[in-house]
Image 1 (cartoon, rainbow, N blue to C red):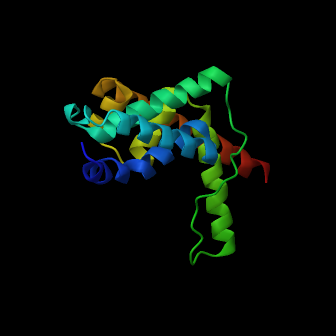
Image 2: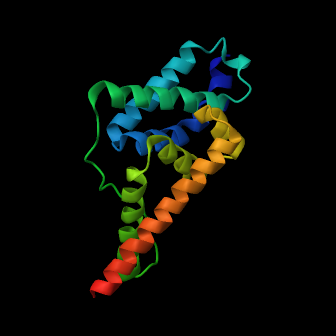
Length: 171
């Protein structure tokens, strides 16, 4: 693979890679570093990249494994959970605050999920991956992906419902 093909086939995935790394690591600087390392690894293997039928999925697998290795090696967990990605646009300040608050609650609930469910819900609901692609990235069966996604969504829904019914009852 030459540099032009690499730029066309691999580099466009860097934003998805970053978002996935950020979901796993929770820190923007570490996520950027991890994506750079993955891109360097892919460039070093450029002669063999043609062997993979889905280059994006392969890059996500490499990234996932590197991030998990980093988390295991250093007992790493970021406290930087306050970065906001919400666009306030033309919303009222009240509505923006409400959406930001809800978004933070959902993120906190998702962070409580088992690691594989966190990754699956991120790949499906944030990145928009198809089930087959998620199965390839996660190296799991399609049925396992569907079951884990369903369980993750159910847990998020139940936890939100409990929190809100408690908050409303307390007012």
